[in-house]
Length: 578
Image (cartoon, rainbow, N blue to C red; front, side):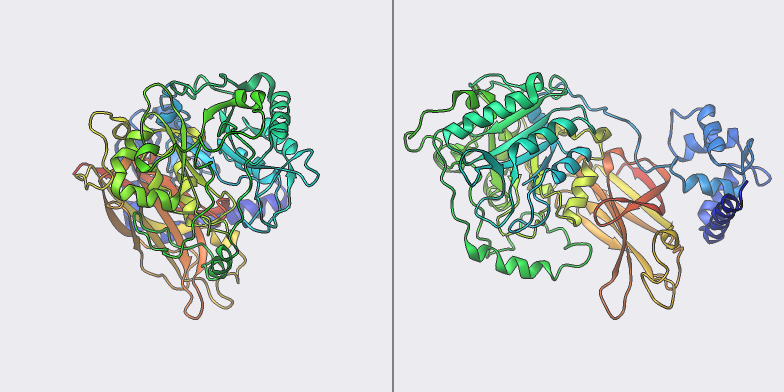
C-alpha cells in the first residue's frame, strides 16, 4: 500500500470514527438490538434489514453483500463503526431501486412527462445564447419534451432556433435536430417529443419537413395529417421521436414583446437568495402586475384564410396536434370523443382557470394533453410551482431547465421516480372518469410520514474550510417539509447547531399526507449567518411514492442539482396509517 493510499484510508476511517462519536443514542441502541458482544452478525444484519428497514425481500446474501462492501472491517459481521459506515454509504439510499416499474402501456395522456421550456436557451430569456448544449444536458437528465422556437434566419432562406424579438443569439435548427437524435435515448428509451413554436413561411415549413425527415428517418413517428383518436403508449413509442405543433394555416407574424415586460423582473432576480426564492403557494394570484406571455399557440386555429399554399409534408409530420379552439375556457376544455389534442396554458392562465374549472381541467387531461409554461415576466428563466399543473393532471409542466432554484429541485425530485425514465403514470384518482378529482376539496389523511433528522456529514471534505465562516466551524440548520397539494405542503426547521462540521440535530417531524401520490419530501441545509444571508449547504427532493422506510443515507445536491461527493444526511423514515 502506497503512502498516499494509506493516508486516504486512514483519513476515511478517522472520519467515520468521528461521526460515530457524534452518533445519536438511537443509532447505538438499534445496533445493540441486532448485535451480540459488539458485533452484528450476518443473521443479525438480515433481521435488521427485514424488521427495522422494512426490506421484506432482503436475503441473507444481501446482508453478506453489505458486509463485503464495508471494507477494512470483519467479513463475518459489523462492529458499530462498520454498521455506521454502511448506514452512511451509497449502498443505503433513500429511494428504492425499482427501475421502470409503472405500467407503460396506457395512452400518453395518462403520464406526467418531463418537459422543458425554451430548451435551447443557455441563460435568461432576453439576451442569452441559443445553443444545442442545454438541449443535450436536458436529454442526459431524462427530459422527454424539448421545445424549439423556429424562425426564418437573417437571409430568410433557412431556419434558426431563437427566442423571437429578443437579443438571444440564434442557433441553426439542423444543429439542434442532430443533437436531439444523438442524445435522445441516452438516459431513457422512452419517446422524445419535440414541440415546435412555428414562425415560418410555408416554403420554410417544407424545408423543416425535409430536415426532420432526413435527420430522424425511421425513428420519426408520423401517423399522418389527421388528429389521432387516442394517443399511443410510451411502451409502443420506445426509441421514437414525436413532433407536436399547431397544424400550419398561414405565416405567423411574430408579435412584439412588450419592453416593460423585462425591467422589473430583472431587478427582482438580483434580490434572490443564493438558493432561489421559496416555491410559491398554489392557487394564489400574487403577481398582479403580470403582463402575461405572448400566446404560444395561434389563438384562432380557424382564423383568416391562408395566404399561402400549405406545406403538406410538414403537416404530415405532426403527431400531436396543438391549438386553441375559438371561444372561451369552456370550448378549450371540451373533450372530443373522436380526437385528442394538446392545449397550452401559461402558469397564470392555469391558476385562474383552476379556481372556476378545476374538475373540467382534470377531465380534459384524462384524454388530452395539457402543457403549462412559465409566464412571460420570468425573463430570468425562473420557474413556478409545478404542483399546480400536476394536481390538475397536466402532463407537460414545462420548465426552464437552466433556471436553478427551489421549483426546479421539485421537478428533479419528481422525475427521480420510475427509474428516471421521464414518464410517470398519473395516480388513478386523476384518471377516474366517473368521480373526477376535485383539487379544491380537502381529503382525509391517507398516510403519516415521520421523519427523524439525525445528523449530517461531509461538508468538511466538499467545501473549503473557510467557505461558511472564516474563523470558526459552520452553524448548520436543516429545513424539512413536503411539497404537494396545498393541504399537504409545509416546511419545518431544526435548531441551529453552532460550530460543528458534523451537526447532530436528532429531531423528529411528522407530516400528515392527504395525497401522498403527489407529495415530495423537501430537505435543505443552510448555515446561519448573523450579519449576511444564510449560506447554502445542500438540498434534495425525494418522491414520497418511492421513499424507503428505515434509516437511510440521503445525499445532498448543489443548487444546480449536482450531487456532492461527500455531503449526506442520516435520516429515518417511518410510514404510519392514520
